Image (tube, rainbow, N blue to C red; front, top):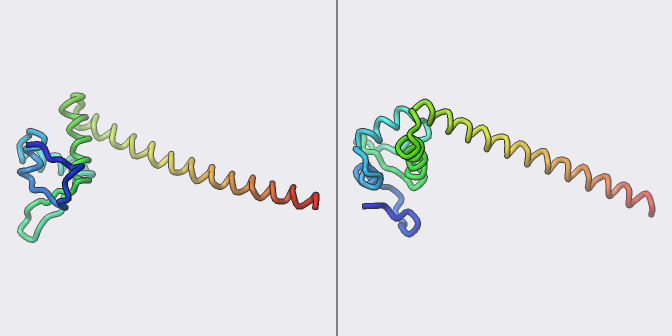
Amino acid sequence: MKIDLENSNRLYYSIKEVATHFGVNESLLRFWETEFNIINPRKTDGGARQYTKKNIEDIAVVYHLVKEKGLTLEGARQTLKQRKDEETRKVQVIQKLEQIKKELEDLEREFDSSFD
């Protein structure tokens, strides 16, 4: 049965629920956990995994890359790494643009004040 992440207010899901959601074995989820550092469910004192919505979204990305697109594990890791690098670059560009905007606003104020 699929998990309705949009309408659920649960905080955690069991490995069995997540495996059923994706139609995979629980052992595959445990394996992916060792292969992809973005998959890191919380573990209880007894060692039971508790998956958050974010964990399930991360698994969905891995599932898409490996099961649907047919990438190797290494190919999926590289794709995830590139995506992270792209996000980092986006943040850096936004910060630089904000800095430039501030400098332009300062120049505009100086220019306006020179005519007063």
